[in-house]
Image (cartoon, rainbow, N blue to C red; front, top):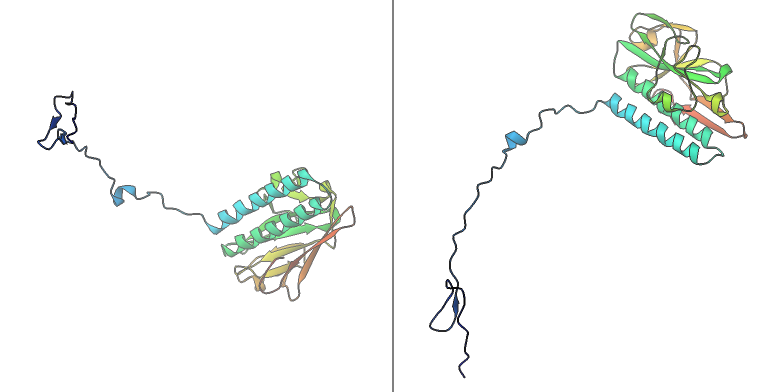
Length: 229
């Protein structure tokens, strides 16, 4: 049986002898696209982050998260957040000391007034660690931050957290080893073991934080390695 195929209405479409449709050929125009070379795609500013900057960012994130936790609920959260903040600040001072031999950094602790701060001392210079305070990264986000009086310090009693023990200071040398201040002032010389007023830790150093609910947190600094937990 022969099947009838209606003639196409488009004059450009024809039928072959066998009845197949013959479509017209249309020329395709290619549009050139400029692809950037690897040289053009090279990032001009290839400066990365320094270790100090990374640690500072981690401290900021830790303080923000700690404040958020305290805001959500109570119980031991004030104690935990202040303990985590102090650990971060001690690690920051340690990292700052390891980044230079021109200055030494440490954490001063005034246990009688439940406060602490970071301080620094220049090489071959005498400094009183109670007075040479430096602003810690993210300190103003900490609900215990105190900018009155001598300022630039964390006043843990503002959130009902006390620091047990006596007034002291922990200093780190260029390889991160911890030293304890034995006097109110130090005269920093490199290497740090030769500095008068400092004694290298021989046993673990503990900092105890207490809240008004009877809970405690102990921060431990390991001698020789300076590991903080």
